[in-house]
Amino acid sequence: MPVAPDPEEIFDRAIEEGDRRLEQSLLELVSTSFIAGFTIVFGIAALGVVDALVEPQFGVVAHIAGALAFGVGVVFLVVGRTELFNENFFDPAATAADRDGSWLLGPLLRLWTVTFVFNLVGGFLFALVFAVDGVLPPGTEHALGRTAEEIVHRPRRAMFASAIVGGALVSMLSFLLEGVDTVGSRITLAYIVGFLLALGPFDHVIVTAIHVFFGMLFDPRITYGTLLETIAIATAGNFVGGLGLVTLTHVAQVRGARKSDDGDES
Image (cartoon, rainbow, N blue to C red; front, side, top):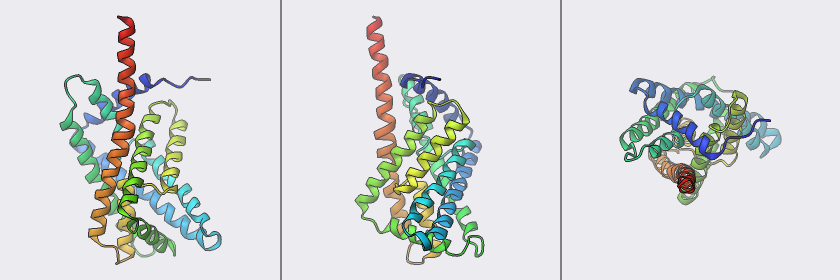
């Protein structure tokens, strides 16, 4: 039975993946970010369809069924190796931490900004396609609109806390993916994290923003101002959870272990 790699080996793998992500051309980065944005819409649409089909007979069980359906969207992202905001926190940050004397702030800001913008562009455009009358089964519009209403009517601090959890989950997925070697293992991890993300539901800014955008298309009570406020709060929470709780603590863990090893050798 293969032994799971230790944190230092995972960190070394993350450095290699981070190099690849940071060195993408602008066209490649825009393309993979756009693809990730519309890919995750499949998971959101699946959630809405399943919720609408299950809820009339089974009530709250529909939420669990919808979360199970949403997981496929994250699988598509991971297998397709597209660029999703927050999922690309750990690997590039590991690369930056490995470069003595440079935190690569320019490349990191370029990566995260382009990813963020084109995730939203791809997601919003594909949501408009799904919103065309007759594309989704009857009842799906109501299910997606209800989800959006539940998101935007939470207290701000609840949304912020939920985004911390969501950011931590998605960044933890990046760390865990570097610890496995098979496509099957990557699919399993992606599906589990996607299920947990939707089960909460916990806020990932791109997923949450597309949910709310769907709500705007089906419910005129949700405004652009509400959408922008949701994006701002979810983004802040994702940075705290994804970059602060997960990424920086794993970086500190490995750097501390290596300093200890260097001390032992001397």
